[in-house]
Image (cartoon, rainbow, N blue to C red; front, top):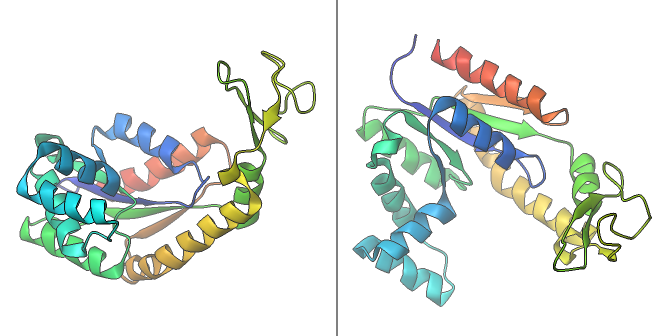
Length: 224
């Protein structure tokens, strides 16, 4: 059995169900999920010197530099819940961040155990995300899907008979743009980790429990 912490990176486009899988992996393996947004918010609320630097960039609308993101990540690793490892979500976003991450782990005599990429064809993602409909009644807010879980009466909520609508960020144009940004951003990283032979692709088109089992099989194979 391989010793050392279980350090995972999880990639997946919008709508791939990555968040659902991450929650189950956290529970099964007892390691925290670390996202860039979360560690930045924590740093700002702590009032530390690092946090103040982050806040100055966020308030001015500027992009937080890689060096600062990596410094915050390094301080997050010092917390006791990271002893057994972590799942990174939304980080690294660039090759320099990936290289910086590797250097940080190397300085701790550690490494990335594996990079898990949940793969779903764009047309399936667009169908999943653009088909969502929400009840307009704020007291209800029930959610439906035109293909997978439609309401009994077309366009109206089963629970309160409120009108159903599509959120602006679920439109075809917005979803297509989000997917383009994702592919532009992650394709160099996927190549980077493929080159290191630590990238594992998982078909994310099936049932949640089947995808979860595939992820677990990969992780178990990496740790035994």
